[in-house]
Length: 299
View 1 (tube, rainbow, N blue to C red):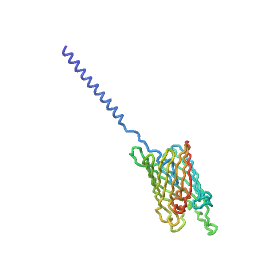
View 2: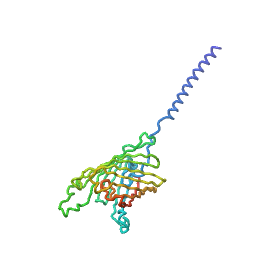
View 3: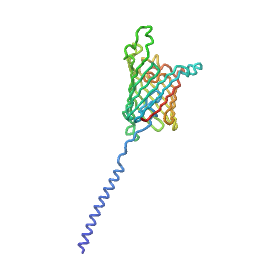
View 4: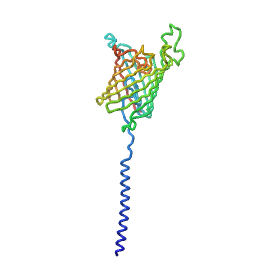
């Protein structure tokens, strides 16, 4: 009788240990599942659109998104009352379409009346900032090509058409755009830039121009944000004729589109125009009222 009781107690002890071992394994599995790494989350809306004022931002159009953009600049304020402070003066306008299929690679095409220029560009999102700062910044590559359809104004006098070689109508721009969203309100980016002209105005001019452009955005309400951008030209060939481009603006979010109001000293809106060839400056009121309108369609 005692032997049977001892045997029963021994078997009970073994079963208890086995059950405890399984319970421990279940607890460890539950803890491991709880501690499993979370899915990587990316920072969104570093800038509200693919352009800030003139400059491209690190942003790329969303998946299967088509962005229709209008950019307009009036004449300079120093035209005075007779020119309605620039409203009557010569203006520039660009119409553009930008599309991305996967939200990472974007293509765009546009046309501006300045030098009757058509432009084609591509952007590629190389790196993207994460919410946990495992990637602390975003990086986007940009390349643009520009083709002027203007006629040579001196052909009738000189008898020589500088555009007889079609390659002379082409110019290019390349940027490495690096940015970070520091908070829900403040974002900043910098973009080392090269602009190349197949044809330059003077023999002493270099075909390549280098610049560093910076841009920032401060969101002070849900729908309003202050913006600013500046391009410092490192190449000297145009410094005696042209000025650095500087602009300040206001972003207004209105449902399906963004309205951007700005003051800028450049008439041109393309990289081969406003970076190397801004002809007016802030110090003598050579500033222009301008606006951008963006309307995004999901395709």
